[in-house]
Every structure is written in C-alpha cells, then in structure tokens.
Length: 193
Image (cartoon, rainbow, N blue to C red; front, side, top):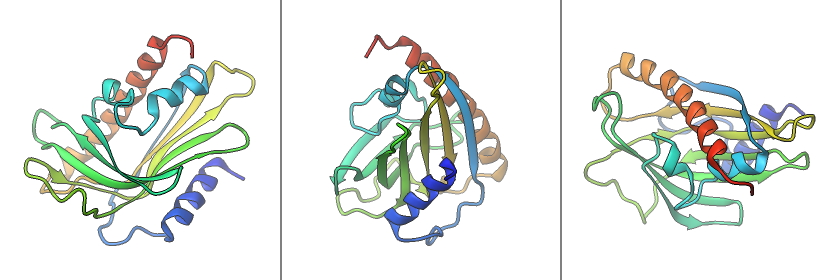
C-alpha cells in the first residue's frame, strides 16, 4: 500500500472521520525530502514530546505540552508557535490529537489527526487559537542507504485570526523550506544514538 494512503487511513481510523469537521483548511501543503541521517536520528529530532529536540531546532515550535495520554500511541497535545512574518502573524497555539505509529518496514508517522477542545487548555490570552486538520510527518527508511531517511510532511492548518491570504500563502512555503534545512542541521549535530 502507498505510504501516504496508509498514513491517511490511520489518521481517519484514529479520528473516526474522513473529512475535517467544522473549520475548513483552505490550503494543503506537502513537503518531501531526503535527510542525511538514520531513521533513529531523524525521529529523535521530530518526536512530539515535551522537552524534546523539536523545540530547539524548529523555529515554528516554541513550546510543546502533553495535555493527556490516551493510549501508548495517542495523546492530546498543545503546540505553541512564536510570532512570524516580522510580527504580522501573532503567536498561535494548537490543541491536537496526536497519533504516532511505527510500521513493519520501520516507517514512523506522527500525525496531528485533528484539533480538539480540551478542558486542560482553554484559549489563552496572548495566543490566537489555530486549527490543524489531518497533518503530520512520515519518516521512511531508505533500505539501500541506512544513513538516509525520506521525510514527508503534510500541513492543513487554519492559522485563525484575520490574516491576509497573501501572508499565509507566502508563510507556509518558506516555513517548510526552513523546516527541512533546520531538521538536516539538527540531525547532523546529534552524536551517535
């Protein structure tokens, strides 16, 4: 089965829906790249955990909080982003159901299956509440090259607030390019795991 199709089916199984509910994501963004680093190193940089490495290298993640652990691989988390685009985009926060899966071939996916409301995280002053529709990262080992990992990213995000469409349209592509560049540097900086 196609890895992207497998990811989407697992997101849908986790959320019980095939379509985003409520707000609609107007744009979907996909990134794809090969990162020089083993799957283990790449995943160490991407793991959605509090005090993980992601907040150190990803300029779009200021804070990551675990609100509730549902099962071993499903949790509810809050992600806080800093202001962006020279302050035009105010700090945001997102509350999502996160599904992490590892497959037989070694592939690991981390998906924000859908945004939710959570009693442990009401809307907070100083942040605009954003909404994620099914999105996430997929790390695929390259069997012929164990020190390389293919990374797919999918974003369907409604940033919330009253942003001009042109700001959003210019932010995501440049942000995704920066994501891959910074991920590559973070993986390179890791000692052997």
